[in-house]
Image 1 (cartoon, helix red, strand yellow):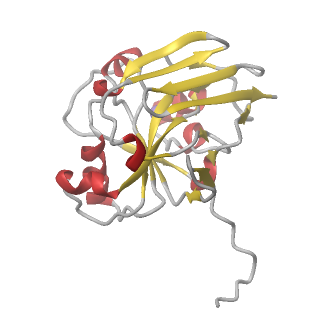
Image 2 (image 1 turned 90 degrees about the vertical axis):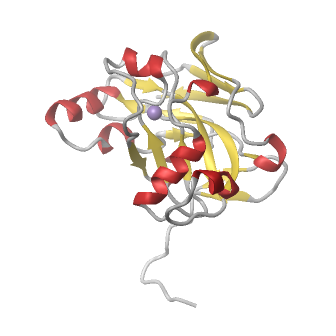
Amino acid sequence: MTDYIIDPAAPTGVPVRGSNAVFPVRRIYCIGRNYAAHVIEMGGDPDRSEPFFFQKNAQNADASGEFPYPPESSDVHHEMEMAVALHSGGANITEEDALSHVFGYAPALDMTRRDLQAEAKETRRPWEPGKAFERSAPIGELVPAAECGHPDSGRISLRVNGDIRQDGDLNQMIWKVPEMIAYLSRFYDIAAGDLILSGTPSGVGPVNKGDILEGHIEGLGGLSIRVTG
Ligand code: MN
């Protein structure tokens, strides 16, 4: 057994429906601008020329049900997304083979310090401060594909304090799940434990301390997050 000079951090775990075992997170990839209506609301032009991804840290995943309002921002936005969890991976995976690497799916949020992201875009600096901060990826229970299949359509929605804010359909994704897996595997060795956040429909907006965020994806279920101070 390896003797570590300090205790290695335990992997971040995501609960799995029907199991006492949790899913250990290795990496978190997030696609940007994957729903046309969201691209337009952010001032862009939807197109299929090339997808782009950024990463969060594995430790940013959080299944606690609480989102502490982060420091250094006064404009933190919700982005409701579907997380894709891999039980295997590799390099240069084909679209045809891609779904065989998927363990399951979960409702998740790509919480964003929008002011810091906007500043990064303006100054051509990396997005990490806006995207990859503590507890920035709240996630619900993972549903095994053996149970839910591979959802490529169905309502994806988010309520804030009961009011509907985001309301889309998985079939509006510009880049589909098999395409995302195949594309990522050209650039990285993707592997068991990886999560892919598949983009947000339109309606993103700011959250405040005390808000209750209730996300729902048809066929998967919901997640409920309380924004704390
Ligand atoms: Mn996002």
